Image 1 (cartoon, rainbow, N blue to C red):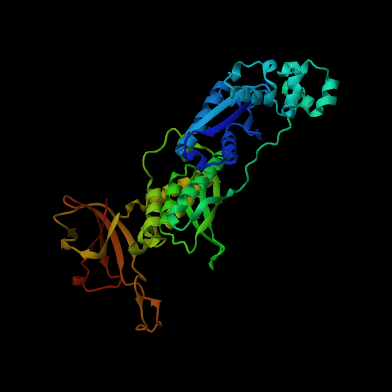
Image 2: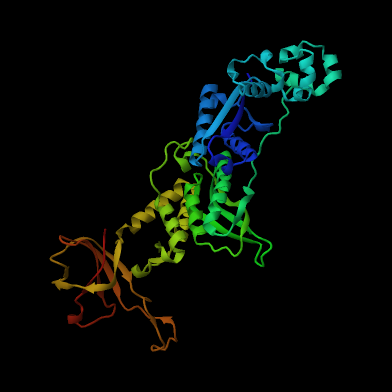
Length: 477
């Protein structure tokens, strides 16, 4: 049996009208409703949903309406607004819309009989309410009792077609809402803004619309561009802009809001700003909506910020050059196996590699695990310069005797230093093999696990020079 839901939402707080105007509020509700059915239409002051094919998926009409109302309430509360939600249902879209309008007068929409619905609840009858009232037609049933030919001649065929659609004799001809591939919206500010931090109020309005768009498309934002339009009367560039990128797709935009606030706090405006526009640059579909919010309805949120969010916020506040992270390098030399790079770029690179690994499947994941096990013998910390150790016999000593646990792992030290043309090879040519290092893992009762190497010359030497030289190179965490 067909089933329709009609929704009408208003904001009851003072901050509400500044957050979204009436048209934007209706589009926002429609975008959120797309998470429950693809058949959503904007009709007059309401949002209509055909949930016939979604009832079984969500456990029935009562459960679906409960989940829909919870999503709307949680969305607006996250944007510091309290919504007033009116809803009604019916077998056709016009019945649901009529019951919704009837409920505005204090009636209970669920108990309103279709025949008893007043004429003003039917959109096609509104131009003729005065005439209908004078001839005694006050409800849908009164109009249905009149001869059809006479109604068509007096009021036009549109009114009869509306009654037929309300009774289900004719199919609904609504234009279904389809969200665009990219989000782009522009708003005019209530007053000229001369300071960067003051732009945050307008940016929050745009982010609220972006949040609803992401929920409707079941996607997360990875990069966006905020553009401010400057006063054209000044001799400056017409616009200014900034881009915000995140390492992980974000659907809950609280973190993105903080990043934008950090950037705007450092922004110097060359002229007053009269408008703002926001555009999505990179988005990624979320196969499981809980991947971004840990709950379809945003109920179970992770407490606190993740390490990636902390790094991105610190980079925005202090500057990218002030927040660094180590990055592994494909080099056999321990001193060159990692380098310090921009932490924000490193996090984005790691997140991209993780998504590629998931896309390649379990085979690539198994290879990554094998590579991780191979690198497990390397220490957590390296000394700036290897420390020469004393030896007892042919064993090193560091704060007492040491116990060998693993090794040797042999590394050739060829090419670790650059030489000039002393050997006749020309400038900038790597030296010939100078030494071979055998690395061992030792345990110390006082210092824990140590990474120690012994170095011996690769060419024959006198017997007294064959004794190994031991060096402490790193510590295991």
